[in-house]
Image (tube, rainbow, N blue to C red; front, side):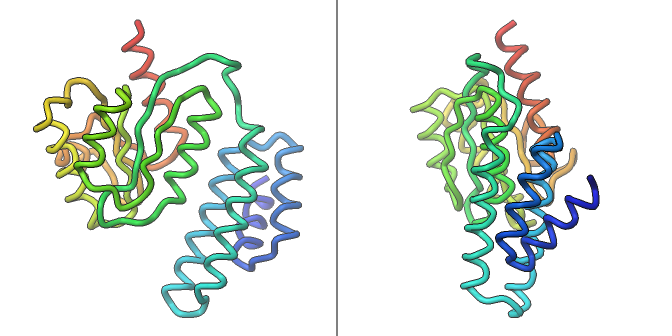
Length: 214
């Protein structure tokens, strides 16, 4: 199925809607993990973004690719492994201030929702104060700070510091995710954990929520 995933990535880059939808449905019907389908789509969107930055693609192509990606997500989401009607927990997530990338975040939101989590998605370019306000309003168990850029490291730390200054740090677990994350960065920003893929992130969140409920 690796070949099919590569073909799906290529179809998205080529903006071939018919082929992309067909491949996604064929992969679902053959039992491919929906997360792997999301990953193939993400690779395609990353390449489209690179072509846009290189001025080989224009805004119209970027918008078209985004619509294609969202369409495939809607097909795949219902097929994600469901935890029946069990409520797992509440997660607050957003892309930190100064970063507007949301593909990875959107995949995480879809996977968590399909597995029984109530997810509050704050969107992109979210300032620290908005995270603090949302924690007070929604009382999540976990806060996810997403960011693709290296420049997102500073805003992640500022957000964790703001949560701490508000007296809320001991009430939530903080996980960071995105393009530039590792143990050293996690320690620097003051997070409880990190993940650079959705499967790892979900396992960490499942563990935290399970421990809290134990």
